[in-house]
Image 1 (tube, helix red, strand yellow):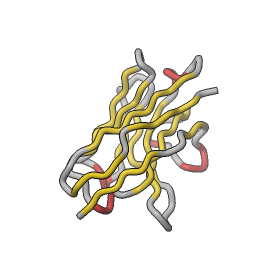
Image 2: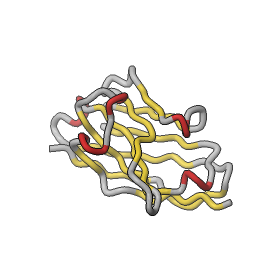
Image 3: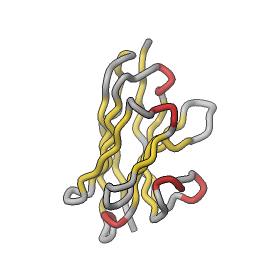
Length: 124
């Protein structure tokens, strides 16, 4: 069993930055690939970024490439999402996810563990 707790959401102006954190607990948490999804009102939940358990493989959605960076510290069982150049269309609830699959294969339907979500609001 893996438990995920997100933090770091909030309200920011367009062009600003936020860093999300996700702390994982559980005996095998560090062996899981981890990632972030987001869901805006009335839209489907989509993958934003994901990282392998070694940190050697990452995946980014086209919409965030060059603006967001995912990283992890296995010693702390924590994954981060640094979000720069935020846009109003980045407004969503951001969910941390953990799964044994490759980061490039992260899909809503197959994710094993989810966090509770944290709200990110970007004002124009």
